[in-house]
Structures are given as C-alpha cells and as structure tokens.
Length: 197
Image (cartoon, rainbow, N blue to C red):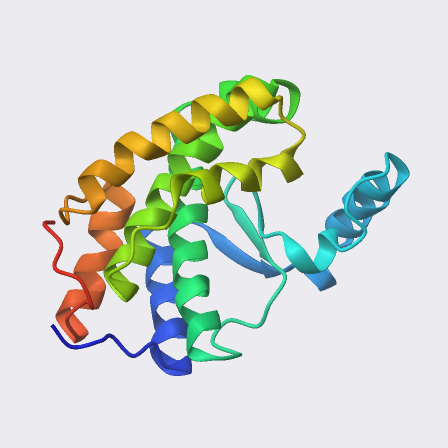
C-alpha cells in the first residue's frame, strides 16, 4: 500500500475537521495566559522546564498546542496528526462526564494514567496507519513518567497498551476517534498499513 503523505495543507485541514467534528478549539499554547500560569506552577514544583514547548494540553474542550500545525518535517506532521487524535480522545473522555473528568484527571494519579493509556492507544492506532509500525507499548507507557503517576500505574498502562498493540498489528482499530480520523484520511489517500475501520 502506498505511503500517506501528510502535507502542511492536509495536516491543517485535518485538525480543522477534527476540531469541528469533536467540538474542540485549538489554542496556541505560547499565547495563552492560563498556560503561562500553569508553566510557572510546573517549574515551582520542579517539573519539566520545557513544559511549554513539550506538551500538548487539553482542558475541557480547549486543546493547547506547543507547535505550529502543519510545520516541520513529514515525521513531525505525522506526530501532529497523532496528537490531534490523542487530544480528541481526551475531549471525548471529558464530554462523557465533565465533572468526573475535571476532578479525577488532575487529582488522581491512577485516573490520569487510565485516561492517558486510553489516549495513547489512539496514538498507537494513528501511528500504525501512517507508518505500518506498531509503537512499542513500553515506550508509550514510559511517557507517563512526565505525568506524575506511580510506577504501578505505568505498569498497568503498559499492559493495556500491549493488549491494544495485539489488535493494532492486525490492523484492528477500536477507538471511535481513530475510526473518525482515519476515515477522513482514507477519503484522500490510503494509509501505509491496511486497517479495519
């Protein structure tokens, strides 16, 4: 199957489509005062000094991106598409029960790990579609170290992602967000890997 080319134009168009379809607003992280305040708090507790440049953040239905959508290399844009789908999954999680999500994500390490494992499963599905490679579950789970969760939570996340990877390697896509996003791409070009959506 031919490789998908993620151009600056179709990357931007995809983000616009998903924002409209999933009901979120994209905000440049560097311009948002609320993100500056959070960055100060992250630095104050000894967190990642590159937080403003390294993490996409979703709060409710606002997605704060630390990059220019469509910019960078082809690999950068593949990751931007995966990030879009990952964050769209967080928006769906929030919309299912806004009060519960708003309390449990910031204040429960186990809940935060669960939400991220679910969203990283979407990342895995997207990455497979564009590259034909299943992202290693351990590598994705280890990303949670930057989310202030316990080692036990990372272990559970890894198990969850291993189960997801077993399906993804056969092209089985289970996430509603992934199905929505990959249908959009299939209308324009075929994925690098065959998937069942």
